Length: 172
Length: 263
Image 1 (tube, rainbow over the protein chains, first blue to last red):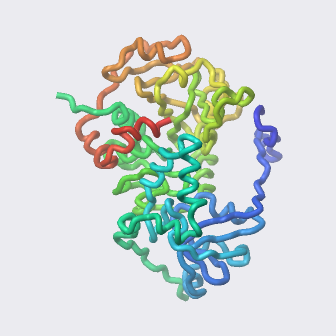
Image 2 (cartoon, one colour):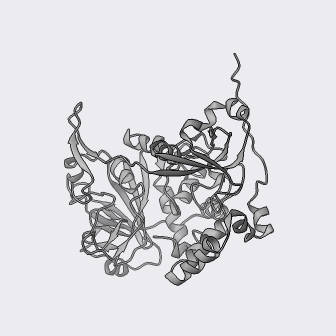
Image 3 (spheres, rainbow over the protein chains, first blue to last red):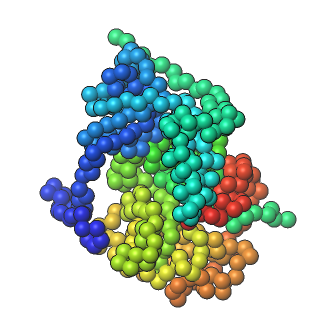
């Protein structure tokens, strides 16, 4: 094996196959986004979760950013929807539109224009710094950031047609 | 009279034609998103698509997808899960077809999406690998989609992100790679396939309007030609209609973004 020295090779003790080993990642902090959590940090997520759960499970500290905080009952009525149990979560940040320009199923669409303008404006360092100033350094908090989006834009990204799942029965 | 189309539309259609009805397709970003949708609506209605953010779907998405993470990719999906589950399907040998792109490709279909100029003489650090190594190593077949330029078609890539056939011959078997390797390279100029023994990339068909000299000029090795060189079949009107319905604003297949965003 060549290249990155952090990789190791070994023979599988069961099949004798040659395996490549990669050291585990142990992030100090994982900041993950989800739809909702209760005040204990129990977190509901739906959609394609990518590496959200694994990142949180590997990290020493977990911060969950959610669209809304819901009652404990909402979580307990649908435990299959739980991505992370509260005891793993160090902080919950209720921040509506916190994922923008990325989408959150059931809350808002991906802001394609925002990504395209970022790609175009950040090609050169100067343009990138300007972008950074406008959208990150130049705003005090998320509210001011969202204030930069036009009402029309917010409306266009909002859910047009709700599409609720059919509740499952946990009864016995 | 043949319908007019862009080269990107032709590439989407060519990609779609590589998808079989019984394929489990690891769908990549950009053009493969459209190719999968098109195949589903034409010759491969039973094909299943998986997306590395954790989505499995067996019906085409109804609204435009800029990325696999767009909400319309969740609507009508049959499985919403994690990347780990999706990559485990690859590891377990269940994925029959993967799509992949790259900044550089070489004579044996090895792809570089990591370091331009190789790691030692680093010039540009690219965003690879993503899932590029896993897909290329473990899918039963892979389709490579590329811009055809001399700087991208090299005798030997300076860094292998996604293994093709290595040095050729039985290199994959010797290195324990389970997947079958690249079965086609679809470029802005033609379609290439691989010699069954030497595993060298060979020109199979030329896109309409492209000259053979152009392809030879833009390929960094002594390119061999298929014994029966073909002309790539242009998109049919129904195929174009479906592609244009999916990519209604021409983001991927017409206009400037189809060029600038395509690696």
